[in-house]
Image 1: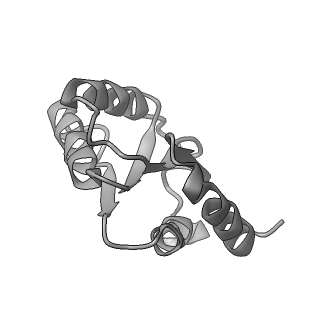
Image 2: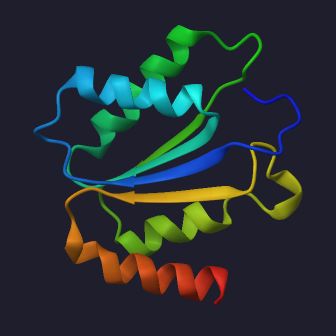
Length: 125
């Protein structure tokens, strides 16, 4: 993890994870953790399991020097409602993990317009 808090990213992962193995999810989680993710928000089918895998991988790496990665899951909300939290959970003065926000849609084109609209509405042009 970068010590000065100027880099890193928050990840919104929207996908249907029902066919993904725990091993594949753990590999992805480890990659994100190795690259300074500070918050993961999951959405879509089986998002609770994705959330749990991120937590498990995070816990195994230890928190002494790195802290704990914040995770949330949103199985009973709209994409727009889940993204509202994602965009606004950390005000500028609390962006300790870095300012970057990454939205990853996996094979879910039906959510794309909602994500674009939410980003435009909440983040500006």
